[in-house]
Length: 177
Image 1: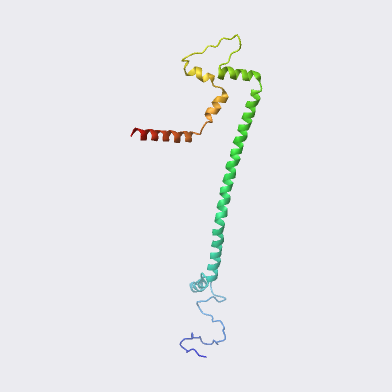
Image 2: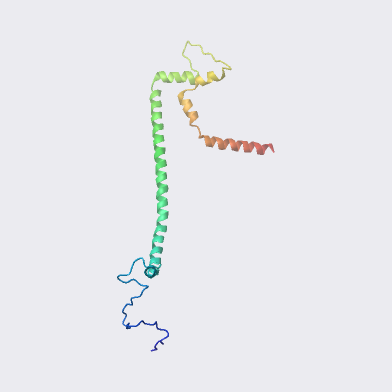
């Protein structure tokens, strides 16, 4: 066993024994001292250090938060996909209703006769058919039915048409070289 020298031991104030009794000083808090005392505030602030325990707890909280980022992001993207699919379902249901109405129209013989006359140029027996050559845009516009107009409008989205036209211009430019 070795004993420490007196130099390595902290000095004790008068009236103190080595039994661990607390010393009351001007730097620490004592009952009756003011909270506004700057020396007392320094002594209590020294007790609020960033300890190893708080670092471990903070690290664990950050680890859990980092672990939750991916599932939360996945959930948000799935919610967006569900919303897009629901919108697609609604548009498809509208299309189905339109096609059902069109099918019901096709059960009517008068509607079928009108379509045959407009689209195919059919005539009844005894009627004379006349074909006008060079009729202009007005004659062609009246011959299209609603079904033909909706299929032309729904053929392809505008941005696909734009990309195709840009590609065609690029290919034509390359051929001219």
